[in-house]
Image (cartoon, rainbow, N blue to C red; front, side, top):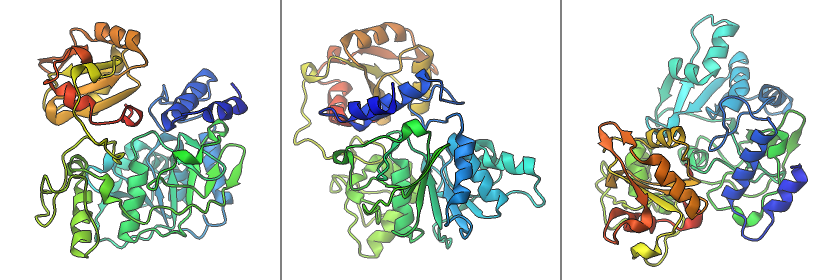
Length: 400
């Protein structure tokens, strides 16, 4: 498959962001362009030559005068994190899934050797040599570096489907840490630079100003506005519960008189912010598409390629279920997670694939719980799958 082949497929009628992701992931694996960790599916893919691509950031006019750099924790960006530390710049790395805050500042020990700086740039170093940065800290980010699954020469970007890079930027904008003039850079393999239909872009999507590959430095000249703050109407109660810093920003903006209306806000109060309420509904992590007019679904309306997994232990994490599915050879195309209901829906390519997954997953345990795994249509209309499967339009299921 050549780059031209990828572009041609992308423009077929009804192409989705997920279609483009799958093309890139499949191509990188098939051509052995991927690097550890593999497989690259459902990740910001690391690739052979990533360190070479990272070196190109030194050719950007903005880099030498940069003081504070925000770099995502993805493996292919490790080289940029190392360069930032070697250049004695302040390196900020988002906390994983924003669970404990927005940023960590990487702080190497005094007199750190080159080997120690290399460790600081790794994911383990981010954990071992970092200090949290609170909302009250005065942060002014001069350069933002994000990972991508696909990006166009126009600066339009597609991530792995969870939306955290978009949300992190929106939160920085809300804090005043970035502005429209703050350059955004992404580092990818040449095969990840493809045409992306503009129709796929949404208001919350982050665009990039520079693309660095092992062979090219591309100035996109993108004029599409970047997010200027958090789009609260796309955030629901589930995300608010998972991300404490998001709740704090919500309360601050409420007190400042800004519009912070959440999805279905009238139904549920937001804990820790008594003046405001938030919804409980399914969420596309972390942004959510507009909901259909009605969620009422009968069991026969559930797609035939959907598998229901029930009886999950209450403390189960999505990552634990993902790992178990991979080990059984039953990784779905998409997964709809409903932890509070102790269940999940797995979405496969077709009915045959779903049936094979049900067979592979029989007898699966998580902790002390034996999981119930059946085709979703076999659930009664009153069972959790009925409300679960209807929460998200099939084109917007969160990817696993």
